[in-house]
Image 1 (cartoon, one colour):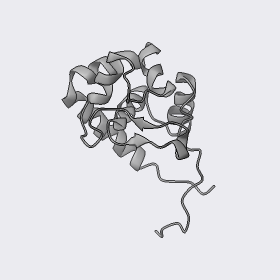
Image 2 (cartoon, helix red, strand yellow):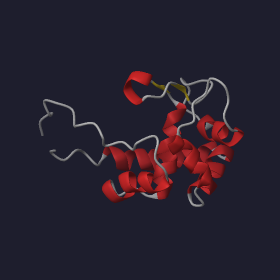
Image 3 (cartoon, one colour):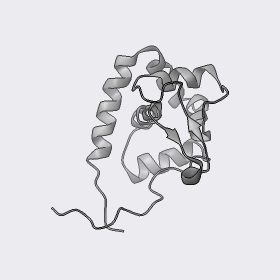
Image 4 (tube, helix red, strand yellow):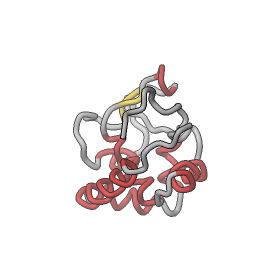
Length: 132
């Protein structure tokens, strides 16, 4: 196998302004991931931040964006706070009746989040890229 000379085209990630149906279209229909995978992978937002020039949004999701933990889910449950980002695709995790119990579970049980994130990340990593 040989490395591709260029990265895949943008647009494979969900539009941050869309809702649950869009998340499922991207992650389930296009990638074959489950609702549990969608919520677990969203927890990856515990690391890093959005950059306005890349996404139109600015800021970190958590108070310590250098630590991988379940704080993303805890922050979602506490509501919006100055200085922390909650995208529409984050907020829909609270309003969707399938996603919400998973948010509650991961906020309460970091080990469950770690286990499910590991499985979801592995699935995502093994997808590869089709030629565009």
